[in-house]
Image (cartoon, rainbow over all chains, first blue to last red; front, top):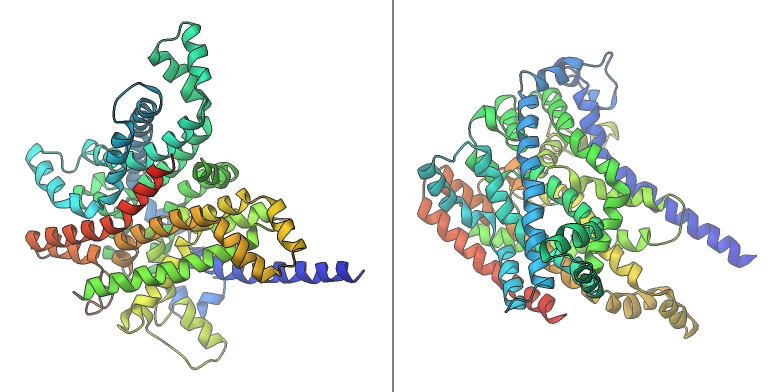
Length: 279
Length: 225
């Protein structure tokens, strides 16, 4: 009996701590939401942050989407991410396949070579890329942007995929060869479908990383019509630094696609990340 | 030079605080209780928001006149107001708090993965041998999490060295270089003042610092096979 009541006390403690932490964690999101629905005059008056406005200022959202060009930014970001993610994963999967399945020399050496790519921060590439791109007229192009993203994503992708591919038993290869597969078919029809969990994880992390990338995009793109969301949002700050209602509405809208991806894949996401580490 | 110092402070803060907090979260969220999956997802969520968006949210929270924190103080009638990010003394730590909000999720997941790999037999055995909760944690759980620690420390140091978006969005390195990091310094030198040479040199320094962390990590990963 005593043991049971101690358990209950423990449970209460646990939920108590969690609630406090959850409250702290949600404050920024709440502030964002509450500010986004207020018109300018509403929140420059006293303690208004804790009061709901008389009416929701939808104009904030409409302004952010149209005048703030957020729709354009989102379209650009979709194009860049939509090109980067599948192409990048395809290249990474081929490399990981070669490292783990094919008879090539210096497998570990090649793998380490790819991993060293993680060492290079984007900052080192900024100046060279800028110089090369301005000569090749690739500044302000989608191609210029997602091409570099693929390059920077390769190390991580190979690390994850190689870990997963290595866990697939070699017997499967032989069975496939006996059934008349060649190496290409083995890769496309056997290995890739088996690796769905790893690929799915990579799709999500890659999408988020590309969608949210700021540094490189801010250097390569300065044409308003080609900007991605993070760069666009920073333009907001420059243009409307004080109108926080407007600014927060913009941020909120820009978070929505990520939020949707996150909610759809949420379960898979946390488990998948964990799986990627274990392998 | 001040940017190297700031960057080192940032790395130390990341290792000490981000790692401890995320480990704490992971331990709590590894217990059996209802709503566990929800809380895991909930604490991970800030991770998926763009760092730039995070910095704008926190810029508003830190706003000295209308921001959340100073307003809260007013409501609670505490006579305390702070200009947070524009005060050179506290701005670095204020930004770190914003970064912490976002950064905890990733290492938390890595620790959770490590915790789940520990079989309950080991914990059971140690309990029978008379280990208390605390002892169990420090002498059984932590050593078994060695691999998670390696990955977490390596990724945290690398991301701490590269930190850019949050700082650029909140202060851009100011006030008076109080929050200048290597990355922001490199950026402003190259693209605002056109000192391309200085900028590239800073980038090289970053690579060297990065090598110190990555080379042991790569060797560790390669050796495992």
